[in-house]
Length: 70
Image (tube, rainbow, N blue to C red; front, side, top):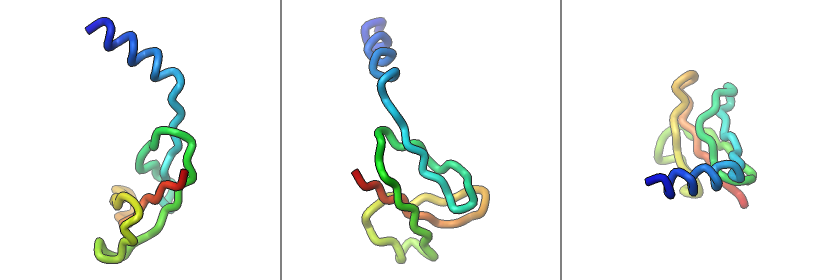
């Protein structure tokens, strides 16, 4: 168990996260790595493009598709 904690600590220091934010400014998720993020507003679940995860903002109740570009 100590070996796993040591490995996690050494790796955690080198990981960079990119924030995915709603149009209202609320942080929806932190994505590991340096990526370009496209946030697309969807009226319903059926309007999604299928290229990313769909999440809901708890502040403004918007349905957003988070598309990651490497």
